[in-house]
Image 1 (cartoon, rainbow, N blue to C red):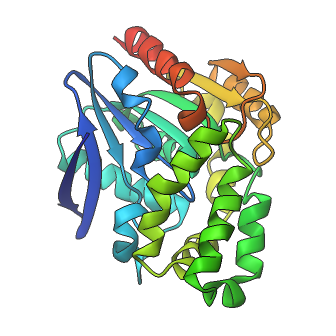
Image 2 (cartoon, one colour; image 1 turned 90 degrees about the vertical axis):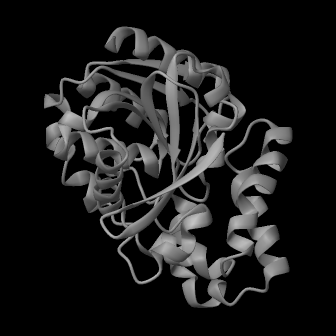
Length: 272
C-alpha cells in the first residue's frame, strides 16, 4: 500500500491506500496502526482501500499531542478527512477495536458518509475500556517512565493476549511497535489509554437500531478483551449478520484476514 497525507480541519492526517473502485475505509484500534490491515487489503477486490490512521496513533502519534484523541473526536477527524479526500458520497467503513467504535459514531453523526459497516471485535455500548487498557491508565505515571527495553516486553505481552496465531503475533509486534519506539514509547500508549471514555459509545447506543445501514460482523469467539456477546447484540441491533470464528481471539484482521476480506467483499456486492 502507498502512504499518503492530507490536511483536514487543520490536522495532518495519514493513510495507506491501494486499489481502485468502491471506496473502503479501514480503521484500526489500540495499540495498532493502519498496518493492521496489511493482510486484508490485498484480498479485497474492486475497491479503493484506504487504511486511515487515527490521530495520535501510529506514525501520527506526534499529531495527537495537545489534541483530543478520544474515540468520539476520532469520528470527527475521520469525517473531516473523508470529505477532504473526496469521499463525501460515502464509503464502506471497516472497523476493529476502537476503530469499530469510531465507525459507529461516524455512522450516527454522519450517515451520508457510510454505505455499509463491517465490524470485527470492536468496542460498543459499555464493553470497554478493556482490562489491559484500564491497567495502563491506572499505572500511568509509573508506566510512562518505563525504560524502552521494558516497554518492548510489556507491549509484546499485551499483543500476545489477543493473538491465536503465534507467528502473526510476532509479526504484529514488529509492524506496530516501531511507531511507539520513535514517539516516546510507554508515554504515548499511556496518553492513548487516558483518552478513552466509555460514554463515547454509550452516547450513541440508542441510535444503533435505527441506522438502517448494511452491516456484517466477524468476531473471534475466544476474544478475552471484547466478549462475543457484544458482537451478537451489535449484529441484532444493526440488522446484520455475524460470523463467529471459533478459537479466534482479538486481532482477527491479522490472524484471520480471509474472513474479514470475505465479509468486506460480500458487503461491497450488497451495497452495490
